[in-house]
Amino acid sequence: MICVHEHPVLLITPTGCIQAIQEAYAQERWLIVRIDSVGDALREVRRIKPNVLVLDMSMYRCGAPESDLTLRVVHEVRRRISKQTIVVLGAGDDPTMEQAARSQGASIYLAINGELGHYNARQHIHGLLPRDGPASAHGPPASGVPPR
Image (cartoon, rainbow, N blue to C red; front, top):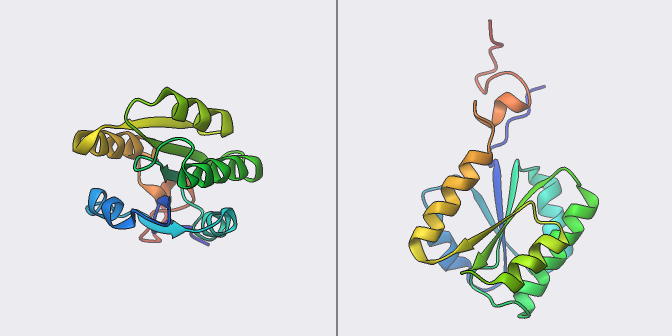
């Protein structure tokens, strides 16, 4: 059986600024989902099985309900799927948000400062994916033809 990630990156955002996030990552083949609860997020992570899970808190301040939900998702995913790579995108250079994300189990915290911040985040996340594409880490090439 060949396991190919159609969406090697799953970007989760709380209900709210989904349109702005979709615009920022429109050229990517990432799956972007909106959640209302930790359970929603866990179901999506289990269903998609992404190489990289990205949680975008860049539109919110630390302490806002949306950022609290995101931090609870980070905590629960880390607790239940310990090897999952979790990237948290935060608003600017907010040391409080970075500390909170890391204490909940984020693998990486990336500060987003405008369009350049989104570009840099995309480049960093691409660097986390398997070099030969998502299929190589899970079996033969996506064509189904085994290597010689």
